[in-house]
Length: 329
View (tube, helix red, strand yellow):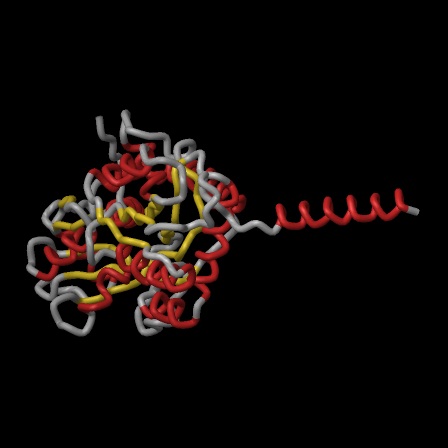
């Protein structure tokens, strides 16, 4: 009987210990619950652009959920590669997170030399939003429809200047696909980010842009830009009066995503916790409403699903870059 009681107590202890181990929260190497100090969020494009907008909405909520600071650090330049290199070289401890768009993958097919491998040097936590673009022009350009836009560009080959966030960015590839399908020739003017490109459009430095709607949203009622169409396959619920480019150019569709990443080697419990908390933050009604208003449609997935999505997109973007004709030594 004494042996049975001893075995019962021993098994109870084992069950308690196992249960405790399995229920432990994600922790740092020191055993502290993660995050135990402020987390740096590297945004690889300038303040005011769509990447920055998404990061600030989402990580403000993350701070509230986890009772910890998530500090935005804009590190722009070289189509996001400056910020990307900083993150790739950061300790894989969960205290450096990167917010990037699918430009992360595009760069691999543009540059012969890169400071990191987009698929091997990062872990994708989750996508955050889908990106829908808008074709817009400076009011001085005498067009109001995609059909008129194409006709003018064909009548003035090479004279229409379009702004982008840099070679290989959303704006560049979206416009390259547009030009390829419509048979127009325009001149590329790259800037250091989407926000500076939009400022250039409003100032008349360039005549047109295809850029995430979020980057144009604040200026749509200003009269300083004229929206023409959207890049999604179907019209958006936020701007139902705007036609799609596909209504004029059959087969045109160009959407993208923003996602959150950590350096390769980050412990799985931390990655899993970040995935769960980011999905919760994006699903928050207030955050979702703010994002959706700017046609940054909330879009999250598991870490495993995101890994598959990244591989698929990398293969797809190889063909898009080929269409653009861009290549950087």
